[in-house]
Image 1 (cartoon, rainbow, N blue to C red):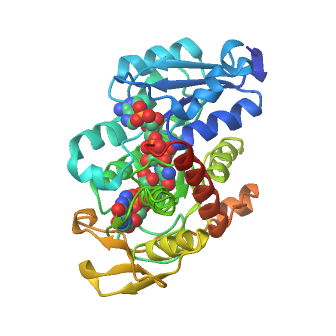
Image 2 (cartoon, rainbow, N blue to C red; image 1 turned 90 degrees about the vertical axis):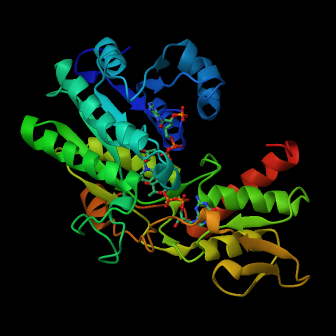
Image 3 (tube, rainbow, N blue to C red; image 1 turned 135 degrees about the vertical axis):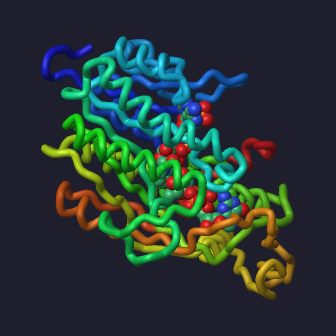
Length: 356
Ligand code: NDP
Ligand code: GDR
């Protein structure tokens, strides 16, 4: 382990998630000692970082260590921070599903809002507030109801879900602790970012998994909710670099990270079907709309009202000029390349393991 001023010790909450796994890889590559907080679960929840855990360079030589903890349990956060004395903390842990947050609203607030102040206070309890650099996973969901397009760091917030309301609290508590205690604390206002490691119930992954299954004859129809929502979709690998870059600046600040391009769910579906040589023809309207195979007429996409949200976010489109001007960040993966990456991965996964 490095010592003195050269210490590079990162703690990642949410290391088992999509972003946590890419960030762990990125930081290990940069020579950091990486620590992650994992939750106790009744079955293994470390699939996304298993390859690192098994890599002798990482786990067995002590470059990566996992600790049990939970964002709802202050004492576990204090114990881990006190034991490892991190130089950088990346707070990615969250109940991150917007639709699910309508079902488990109180828990979402516990983890996503109160959890953030718990970890900020844990840093202070350990006396590290002057030395540690803190990244918080903020979100474009804060913009919610569209007041301005594209959205920048100056666009007013109007959250539209229990998830976004919880993340609104965590955004401001990070700003408040930065101002009150002079902490190096940043909010990354990240727009949607996807990858083959995206959770299966987010729309992009649901689409690429289902289309891979339809292509292989394992599934007939893909059921979706609102096809008209527009999102600014980037690749998670690009976005974890931005997290790190924020913490390497002279001053802490908040930054939008986005591609600057928005596409509808409908377009995502069309491009993903095109990848397996099927063209979709849309018929009907609203909940009666279907997506049919242009050649055979077979219904491949059906609308199911159960996937509509009580309040929807119609258009998210970010302007990441501030990050580009300040530290040169820009996305490297285009929309079509993102769809291709996810389709290739799910086609391979489903052909090897049809029950996945
Ligand atoms: P994931 O849902 O893939 O990962 C969430 C992580 O948080 C998992 O490791 C999960 O653990 C962990 N977690 C959940 N609840 C708790 C808890 N109570 N205590 C400790 N850990 C917990 O999310 P992403 O990787 O996609 O996103 C990372 C962060 O960025 C989240 O905060 C999300 O809200 C935010 N964000 C994501 C965007 C995106 O497009 N991906 C865009 C903007 C913000 P387990 O594996 O055990 O479930
Ligand atoms: P989002 O991602 O809510 O933007 O939050 P999600 O992929 O869940 O939804 C995107 C849009 O697609 C519409 N949609 C569907 N969504 C899901 N999940 N399932 C469906 O069947 C479906 N049909 C249509 C949704 O209504 C929505 O408009 C993600 C998460 O990663 C958050 O944690 C993060 O903060 C934001 O991105 C930025």
